[in-house]
Image (tube, rainbow, N blue to C red):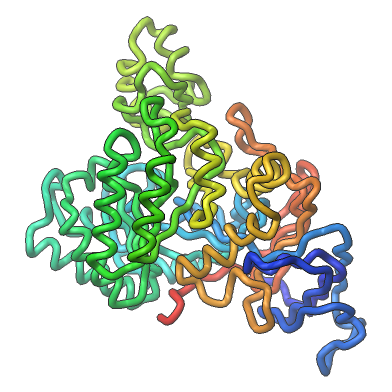
Length: 492
């Protein structure tokens, strides 16, 4: 699926290099899978062996030339194999997805049953007993974008334990440790946990710390869906910080939020705490630019106060896309009882306050992640629109940061924090992952009612030097080639 790559000259654009530094007008020259030169007037001083006759010249006047966006938080582990075109992501300018978040990764776990750890990754069986197996599968599928994988703590528990409602025994922890060590040796970028979820909630901090120490030895990172994002969020932040600090590993706080009306405004507490933790250890956050989250159906999240939009339901698929409050009225029952009848399923929970989202997204430690769930029948619009929405709403409309800072949150910062080598910056010698977009029109079109919307303003996306996507209206938008790769951790 990889087309032969000619040299490409992106000419006369606004170069935003991903570092957070000032932008400048100029050119970017790509040859093979690398960036070979940046500057002004490059057509007049081409490298030896190149002439305009064997270069594709792209006029980028009035456009931004930036590094390909890195989605810091995804659940794309299985979809890159099942649907390698990855249109929801490449159409946003995303060239690399970080998989295995919230404690759930496809590897290292293989089971003959159809019930996987949670259902965030779809209903298919887990088939990859090692990270090397998963790498082989990704290479065979050759998705349109790159994949950087984390190893899920919950997945390790499934692979090593019979019962998950308790801490791991010494033998079980030893098996988990061996599996994780093997995955890190095979290039995984780190460990993730989802202590909020039932399958991992019984795990004490000591269990996670022991695993994080293995990650530290390999130079990886630890990303966590906190044990609580609601009333106990301060305690959960201390637990995450202490776990990473004790293990000697950089910490990423996943999709930071203060969830539930009783917690609105508490980013005024959480962000200063995170800043204090950052004085003793490496720490960062990711965030998606919406007031609604999305996960599996949980009756404890259906409180009768916030709106809850059903994204899928196995027993009642006909209810997909409707509010649970409306379904409950139709069934003449409570919302929690309706939730129980709809399970297993998923939902969007309108549980955040816009002011909290703005504080988090503007914070200098924050990266951008979509947290999209590609297997949902009626997904959260973040799956298709998260990155363009940051530009349209939080840069162009709200002016919470500069254009350069917005790009940095999607590129250079993410590559540095997640140990992704040779990507995230426009510089000579770096991998040729590049996006060209219109800064005046880039915007999301996906909504809660119509979540499958191709974003506007993303004109060209190059992955490893190959034109992977060309933007357009409606059916005019298309994935042109699949040149993605399974990445290994920087230094691996």
